[in-house]
Amino acid sequence: MLLREIINSIESVAPRSAQEEWDNSGMQIGDTERDIQSVLLTTDVTESVVDEAMERGCQLIISHHPLLFHGLKQVCGQTAQARIVEKAIRNNIAIYSAHTNLDSVEGGINTRLAEKLGLTDIRLLDPESGLGAIGKLPKVVPYPDFIGQIRAILNCTYVRYTRPAKEQIQTVALCGGSGAEFIETAIEQGADVYLTADCKYHEFQDADGRIGVIDIDHWISERHAREIFAGILAPLGVKTYISNNDKTPIQVWQEQKN
Image (cartoon, rainbow, N blue to C red; front, side, top):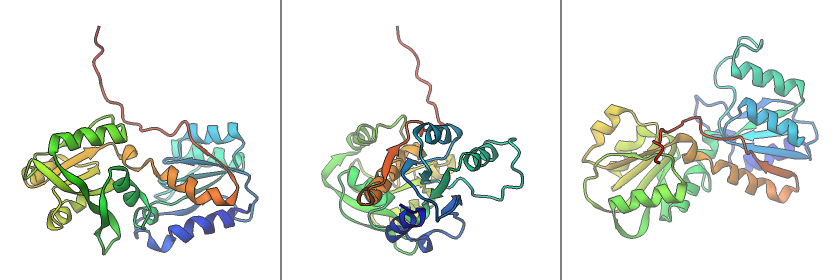
């Protein structure tokens, strides 16, 4: 299977034209005319992920977060990014990313996250950007119960949250990744709670008592990108692996109990 055929399949679902202006989805490293037998799927491209691709004999890594966001001025092993680029090139491993274009399409990151949480009547939260999703729980539930459901369903390492406007909730808005910019949109759309990642202190402060903002680990909110990629590639017959080394870099202190 040629790499360009794999790319065409991904972009038939998540066209690069749908990415945000600041994004850098698409080919990161490699030749689109090369033959691919096996693919490693990951959220982030780290050195350990590239090592895993080498060990598994994968010719291609497909990631959600692009390896290259900003200009890379030197490839001399001084940074993790430079070492990854050098190692991938030396070992003939191509890297392709689908980021905000996968976020903003139906069946993409936000739709899948909404489905995982059991939402129905799912629609775009921000139609202008295509980002975020909003839907309803099957029934009204107490806010603390919903937080517990999120933690259990997504296997969250931590959950931070604000006070909601009301304790019984049903309409849920969300945006995988860093989505604090859509808190006001969620309020305008009538959401009782808003789930996202990477919220700052003053964003919590502004939302407190107006909407229940629920903040979880960025990686956990988007790791299902790997499942989406696997589904897209399944009909192609190419061998795929979900990386064992793709993990959140955030560690949460938990006191050991005797």
